[in-house]
Image 1 (cartoon, rainbow over the protein chains, first blue to last red):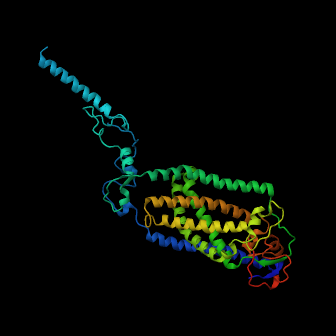
Image 2: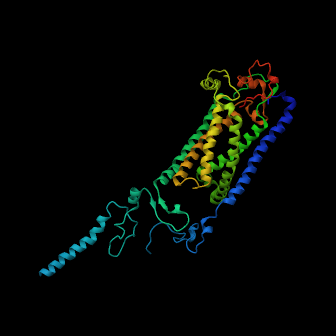
Length: 78
Length: 342
């Protein structure tokens, strides 16, 4: 819609209306993201160490696996 | 020395030679084992005759075993495409991204230092005209906010561990990256919604017209020194529009494929999706940098269009003369008509 108005008279209301559009755009983006994030989080599956707990090797904890925390990658017969 | 003793001596020498030299010959052309591995009491390497990984890979294309967990993909140990993708992601992509994005930033800075701001182009009339309605402005800022979050968090995937990690340490970087990943996934949806609305609202005004080629040929007036005629959107703005729509489409499609891994494609499809996503993102970030530049400090009066939705009539006549002819006597009565944009 095309409208013409004296810019000086309307500057104050234009500024507030402009900021309202900017802030509402940012706010709605955040709201949609929070909603979608909640849905996605509810759909996510647990990690393997929670889904398939085993008494042996832990895939996520290199400090307590078979190799040990001080493993250098070099073979040591002793 | 009797014959039996001579024969026993010769046999002993032959056996010693075979046991000592045989394994050495069998090792020729194979991977060198780590020190100590294969040091059997007999001196023989029990794995010397086994098939190597490289031989298997060359023969069947990938190394695959068997697993007892539900995720059958975990049985794939080695596949050449994975190495190609890793090389791209860890070596080429950071350089491509840095060159393209920093190159655009440097080019814009040089352009600004040489040319300064694009001037108003006419004496302001003091009267303004609606250029973007509320829906257009709201959607622009929703999409822009989403894109900024997506760009920052997306760049963290590639540059975070190289630039941010050394500065803030592992704990802070891990926390930031985890939240960045959540934000990247979530803000993708308002971005996709904004792209759809943009395509619907602005498609008609971004179709090619007879003003585009002259506008491009004169680089928007930089060559000729005069403002070439343009409709609601000039050719440069149309290029931005189509880059955003097509780039957004590529990002959305590849992003959804990655957001729901292996739901639609296999491992190779996942890697293709990441190629598409990476290239599209780098290109779109560079293009949007140019868009932000021209919409803010690059051109006098451009930001007000998307801020308040209004521009001065003389500005519109100067930059979009085909939409608002300078001698249009019916301008005040043109209610419902489309308005020019920047």
